[in-house]
Length: 265
Image (cartoon, rainbow, N blue to C red; front, top):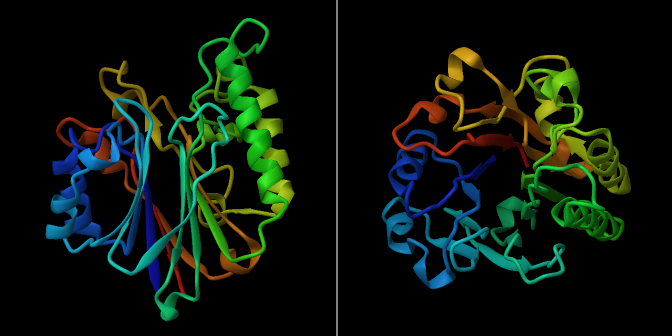
């Protein structure tokens, strides 16, 4: 058994008390964080060690972006890809090295949000997002190991992944062009969307609620921006998937909530 969590934490140092609470309550074997917003030397290693998480792969930068994978089980950093092609810290891959976990690969990724206008001619950030996904797709063609890719994809692909499909069709994160681009990535390796394996469409499934919503739970204007996808052989071993919505109500919350998938390896 191994459990893997993913969480866009929106500043790991600011929200370390919430991270600690989550780890104490849920105790996943591996936690993948996005948007850590710190350089590698600033990461709170000691706070994680005190919680029993002694293995790290941290790819950070000053003030923005950044990803980190921490674990109770041994791992080694496996890869860093610059799919943004501009030096931003948006990916780190690890291999679990304990023989009991069969060399499982976990790719932790933070896809660019893409700005406000879904038109690359007037919004360079939207073009960068599409190009990022295309580079990921070319990478996926060569994947040949049991692999889990997860993180904040910043796309809600299905109608049931958003609070109002029609109202969001022209909003970045749910436009047809983004959905089509993400589908090409899925098809490149035959990934299984583990969230929708265990919470089938059209069931409601959100992982993000804007800070602008005064009462996020009552309004429930959410989107499923966070994903955990597995290669076919690994997807067959997933036995449970959980969305921890209550974390959105904690003090000083991230606007995202953690996902956890359990595997019987």
